[in-house]
Image (cartoon, rainbow over all chains, first blue to last red; front, side, top):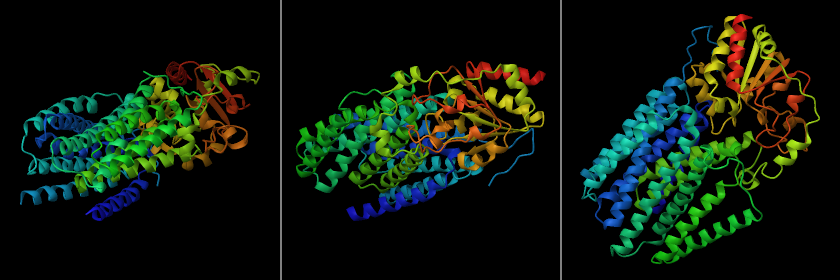
Length: 100
Length: 463
């Protein structure tokens, strides 16, 4: 079981590395907020902790975790979208000089 | 059946996340891709609601609603100038979620009387709370520095590194204790405490200019903590997303350190410029400086054929990006060509300048990376440096005794004329004298970046 999980981790890290090396410096800030939103997936674990009735402390901690993770997901995706909306190539004053 | 639906939603979400990140390789496709990733997130959350282990939905829904209520303003209303601290804060939230899930897990087993935790799972839990707690406090400190609640100069004391390393060692020993005997709750909880203290002490000695590396590094830790949560819960999507986040943060911190010609260790333990600022700024005042009036600077710009603008943190502080764009448009209307040269570590986070300029409607194909534009400086009539300092210091190329020697810089000094917008003659963040400011081709336009630019705009208009 553990070895399977290690496979998943190593391969995912590898894919992540390959994909992210291709992200231009232009978009490094959106990249950070995007990965931040995506890592809000810990909500999945938080929901289980908040809803499993393992005593009131476990529920309370799970609840706070749900709030934190949801905040990150909602805020993260919204701010990423807001930023990406701002990146435009169109130039109204001069002919756009396309770069590779 | 229900479990299969859950697993399938996770698989779909993972694919959408990876495609979303892949879309970030091009600005035109990025928005669409990230919206698909958000759909993936929704799928994963809905899939989780079907899980058998969830019995009680009340707190989950209250938490979700509360999270949306807090997240919406953080996403929509935070100004772009506050982005670095916004990202630091969200790293802290993310790590807090991982840490709390870890504690909740541990507590449920040892106080709910469900037997014991196997060593492998305990190791995962241990890493989760160790990295989590460290990131929570570390990111909070970074937030405090970026928001200027804390002094952004490095805070140092003698024997600092020894204390940090010793504390980190204690943390590791406690982790090993936990794995060896998972039932020893004291070790588990004191490990969290030690990690939280290490987080604070690790970030305190790091100066504001080094923040891009720290933010990227904390991003990586936050991802690894999420991944460890996945190992502890046996949940693949957490492992995958954590790995993606960890890889991205790791890669960014490598790129940032490279752009400063420094190793990780040097950023974390170096406390750059913390020791000599007072002495340095007092000593080197003998060199000549040529001040220029806004009128003269405007004439140079108005008749220039090729202009390269070099923005730095000073532009962000003065919130001058809109005025910069206005000036650039005026020059272009008069027939000049304007490009922007962006140093990888300009500002307080990776890509900081790009976002600010994009916000001000500067088309992204005018923004050039260091390697793309450095060859063009010799043919440039005017290099306009706005609130940047160390990233244009030729000492990094020429003076082996300089603390920033070897750092790749923008070759602004090779332009025919250089105009530097600067508040005063104080040394840069690192406390290093900048040779460029004393070069014969350089003129200094003193004053707040925004008001200087406003003056330039009106002068160029009438020129």
